[in-house]
Image (cartoon, rainbow, N blue to C red; front, side):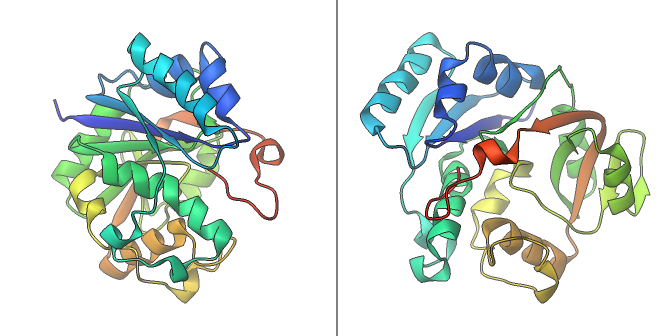
Length: 243
């Protein structure tokens, strides 16, 4: 069975939900994937009382729920990027997923933003990995978003028993990827047709551009969905980042 790293992130608006709700991290973010992750990582990104959040996160490590936590830091150079490639919001937005990729030790990485969870169990990761390993062009897998199966089908060009297959598209809300491939400096390309991504040249747009330039594909599981919580609750203030 392939080794898969689970990673999620928290910031000032959502760390209490992730770390204090007794079921959110343990069940809705981790357990409902029904997969024996080789490690489970929390990226702490942009919180006001870092010491407090670290102490609570360490408690989750002591319980065995998390393998470790990591405080987000600038790892842009490892990915061929510079601070000047981003404005302030884009920079902090990119830090958490890039940190997760940088830190992941599994063959694959499943990353969820802190505002993403599963309301019910979905057994999908092993199926997605088998699909990706049989079809080298498929580089990203995810669940359907917010039960929008019709939208996922519309964005695809073909369908299999378990997956919708699309020639483009990427979301940082949830992605399952080969760790080594995404550790490479693949984040410097920008396509004009990626303008549908908000807030400029963000992390998502950079991966979208690289994937499309090389004909990489995305699969979306058609028998299970994640929930992306109320954007108004998790949206950063105008001067700050999101997780």
